[in-house]
Image (cartoon, rainbow, N blue to C red; front, side):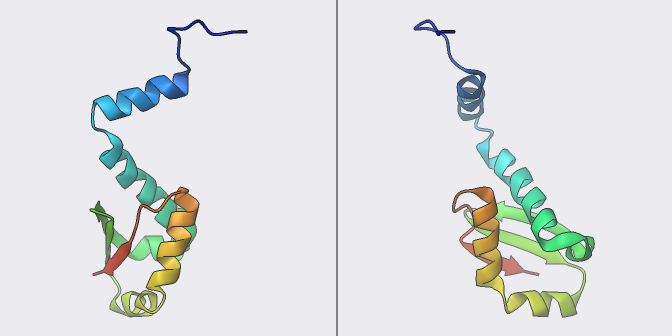
Length: 97
């Protein structure tokens, strides 16, 4: 099946819609939250009370100070793991609160 000159794929249409309506920031927030929960596991996700991606900085609020301290030792590894799963360098800095 060939496409005519003015036809576009569904992926192209969705990408255009996201760009036109400035939705990428919100989609990134949701994607980062999903990747955090899947990569960090249910035990850490249970203590995660809030998350915000702002200008390539991921702010994660944790309810356990002990867990926060443990995770702070592996920040670079966590950032690398999240970006690999996201398929692009979306997170450059991680702040644990």
